[in-house]
Image (cartoon, rainbow, N blue to C red; front, side):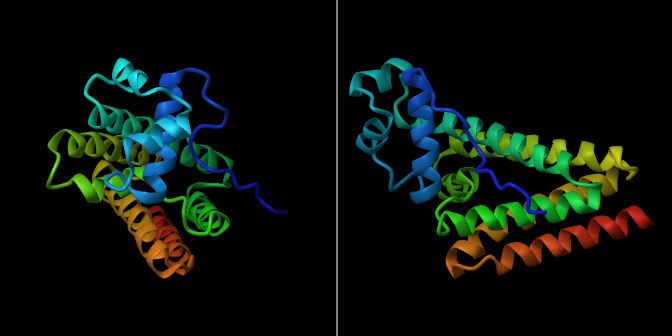
Length: 203
């Protein structure tokens, strides 16, 4: 039986101008990064006027980018947790998450990657407010994964280490897959994540 593959993020067309600006930012940042995305591109995709950007985001592109990062982070976490919940157990959930990410990459011709990771690499040493926004997203993902592993029976230390490893494997695999235009790194990372989880639970 085949498993339905959904793209993470917004599932319905945003109604408000503000939401359209954020959705356009997510789409463009994940495909081409923040630096290569101009305000005019965002406005055109969002079907919004120039004045509306500064009405909703007085801080301009940086303020919009911070909202894009946090909104994308919530969307991706929700998507991953849905995949996790549909899988038959903690180990199977690891395979499902990474296989789902590989499928989205392939279906989008390697264009749909995590916008949080894409922006994080750009701003880590150049824009402290946006670095903090990406760090907040990663912390929320790590906390959620740690809670899942703790609920499965792991102690706090091991659950934390495993959550760090899984998130790092997933985000790193996106980068390598896109560069190599291959899902092999994502699938290999998923196999390793499942193996590590299985070993931890069997101790």
